[in-house]
Length: 125
Image (tube, rainbow, N blue to C red; front, side):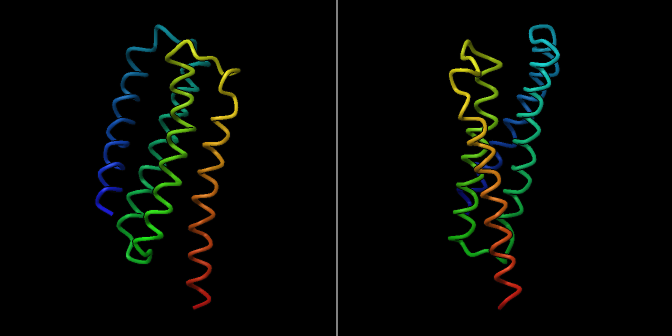
């Protein structure tokens, strides 16, 4: 659990750094559409960092459930936000990695669905 929290805190710090970088350094480099895409990546990363803080401090989840949900959201952040960062900050084109961003979105959906299933099962107990 503490490993998950350490990774989560690192991802939160990274979201702040990248957000500031985008707001200041990239303002003159990226088009408004590219900057909007970059900001979406930062925003989704931070949303899921907040969820990860909840997941890993909530007593209603077992350690196994915390780990599973955390890994799913970590992959979501890596694939969704990470692919957008790569597209906006490097010469890698969206055409070359088109499948990675939606895969990250799918990981986010699976993570949320996993929590729904756990909570529904708790209601049935």
